[in-house]
Structure formats: structure tokens, C-alpha cells
Amino acid sequence: MNETALIQDAQRGDLEAFNRLVLHYQDAIYNTALRILGDEDRAADATQEAFLSAFRSLNSYRGGSFKAWLMRTVTNACYDELRRQKRRPTTPLEPENDDEETLESPRWLADSSMGPEEQFAAAELEHAIQHCLNALPADFRTVVVLADLQGLDYAEIAAAVHTPLGTIKSRLARARLRLRACLQDFGELLPAPFRLDSDTEIASVERSRA
Amino acid sequence: MTAPTFRDAENLSAYLDEQLPRGIATRLQQRLDSDPQLGAVYEQLRQARHLLRQLPARRAPRNFTLTPKMAGLKAPTPRAVPVFRFASLLASLLLLLTFAANNLSALSVPSMAAASVTAYNAAGMEAPLEQSQPPEASAAPMLAAPALPEASAAPTTTPELLRMDPAPADKLAPQNESPRFTGFIPAWVQLGLLAGAILTALAGWLLHQKASADFTRKNPQ
Picture 1 (cartoon, rainbow over the protein chains, first blue to last red):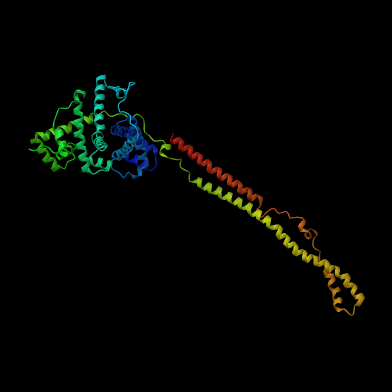
Picture 2 (cartoon, rainbow over the protein chains, first blue to last red):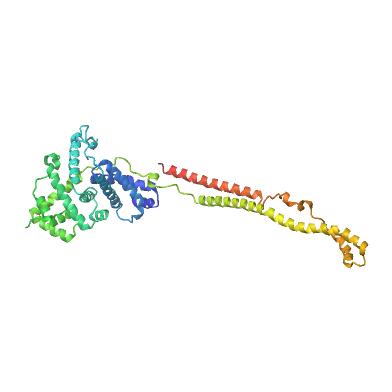
């Protein structure tokens, strides 16, 4: 895929070229929205909104990482969605059965390429991480998702969220420390390969920030 | 050896991502080698990042490609369409103008005709009067021919007056019959304009339809 040529064609209004870019990036954009919003339906809405917004403002793209530019649009869409979410009743992340009990091993995480045990471990890990991500403030969550899940560098994240580089560095460190502490609380509930050693350093480091 | 601060954690996090300037990274590496507490914080940050990277990537639940309708795209208008539309509009306007011109002239013709007929009648009515004079004038010489030289001059004009045609009968009474007026602009011109307006409008519409069909075929909804 010649990304530059596709972008130039799309900037001239070629929807087919833009849709090829959509197909290439839709998984990354959807995953970013999913981890920031913590809800599949809202993530799908935000993803669609992000691509629509990207097509409309494609002429404002002036080169550089197109993925980072798309991440900026999806981040904005997610923030809009979070603002809307504050004004509306929320639905739980975890799917529930008829008795309104959270399912231990959600069917929606099933991956046919994994064995049952692997599926269970992956589901538990995802559940724990998403739970801890949801506990973070939205700004921290966005930074850690863009850095650790999408692999953007600090400059790209700073451009994506319109925030100074120093703030990105600070938010990322704090988000990682909080995530580490949160995941530590899961203890034995985490799949064995992912269990963390106990420690006392995080609390003291976090206190030094205060 | 001091307890790690949040600034140290920030630097360790950036060091982990290889986002620290080389000088600072070197000094931090030296501290990591000699400070187990700092090493522990580094390890916690590394584990957190490692766990996050284990998060399985989901596939998008559907394709998020845009349709022309979603993107607000419309079929491009062929360049000839505005030309055809303008030609159709122009022909329609000209057609209206020809009707207006013909109607206005039709209204003005009776009054003009009336004016000319009145003027002509004035001249025409004099002739009969003068025509009626010769018998009187011709009688005058019989009564007093030598004594009235003016009267004797009268008979000299009589033949000319007699030769003068009286006003035509049809122009003598124009008030009773309006003239038939077919207009300045011939009907074939109006028909041509009408045909031109319709044909150019039709050609523009057909071109637009064809462009829309091509666009829909290329960008299915």
C-alpha cells in the first residue's frame, strides 16, 4: 500500500482511496477507542465518527505520521463520547447474563485460535487491564493507550492530545505506576504468567509526587 | 542513596521508552546499577508496560469505510451542464420577451392606427367639403362673375380637388373595426426559441443523470 499516494488521492476527494486507508487502520483506531472508552458500542461509534471527521478534515493533514494524525481524530472523538457519557446513563463494560451477573468468561472475548485455557487467561487479563484502565483519569488513560498499545512516541502523543511533551512524560509515568498498583491488587486473579511481585515502592513514589 | 522521587519515576518511564536524552539516560543507567530501590521502580514500570502490551488486539467488529452519502459526496456535475442550463434559461427569457414585445406592439397599434386615420380623415373630410364647393363656385360666376374675382379663382382649383381621391371607406370608420396584427416577431422565431429551451434543458438533465449513474456505479452505497 502506497500510503502517501492514497492520502493525496483522498485529499482530492477520492473516497475509494480513503476507504483503503480506513481498512488498513480501522483495527488500530477501534482498539484505541475501545481502551479509552471501555465499551464496544461506543468504541464503534467513536471509530466511525473519527474516520468521518478525518475525511472531512483531510486537507489539514500536512505530512508526518498519518497514524498519529488519525489517533488525534479518534482521541477527539473519544473525548466527545466521554463528555456525552457524562450526560447519559452508562452501561456496564462487562456483559451480563439474564440475572444481571457479570459473566466470568465472556463469550465476546472468545478467539477460536486459542484453546479454552488460553482463552480464559486472555479474557481474565483483558478484564483486569481494562478495569484498571477505566480507573485512570481519561487524560492518563489516553496517553498510556497511545504509548503502550499503539506504540506512538512522545512527540506524536503530544501532537495527538495537544499537550506539552513534559506533561505527556509525567502522565505516562503516573499512569504506569497506577496501573501497576491496580493490577497488583488483582493478585491471584491474574493468570499465572502475568502475576506481579509484591512491592512497596509505588506508594512511596506516588507520595513523593504529592 | 536516596528514595526514588516522582521525577526519577518520570525519567525511568521515559528511559524505558528510549525517550530520554543520551546524557540523562547515561547518568540514570549508572544510578540504576547502584540503587536497588530505583531498580525496583524501574522493574514495576517495565512490568506495567509489559502487561499492557499483552492486551489482545481486537479486530474491528465491522468495516468502517465511508459511503458517498456519509461523506456528503455528490456526483460531479459535467462542465457542459451549466452551459446547457444557461442556454435553456436564455432561450426561455428570449421567448418571453418575444411574447411581451408582440403583445405590447399589438396594444399600441390600434391607437397609432386611430391617430393616423384621424389625421388622414381630417385630410379626407376636407376633400369632400372642397368637392362640394365647386357647384357653389361654379354657380357663382353665373350669378356675379365679373364682380367676384375670388369666386372666379375658385373654379380654377376645382379640377385638382376633383382629381383628389377621397379617403378610403375602410379608413373613414376605424373605430368600428380594429386592424388584424400578427406581431413584430414571427411565429417561427418563437417556435425556435421554445424548441431550443426545451432541448437544451433536456440535454443538461440527461448529462447530469448520466454523471449520477456513473458516480453511483463507481461508489456503490
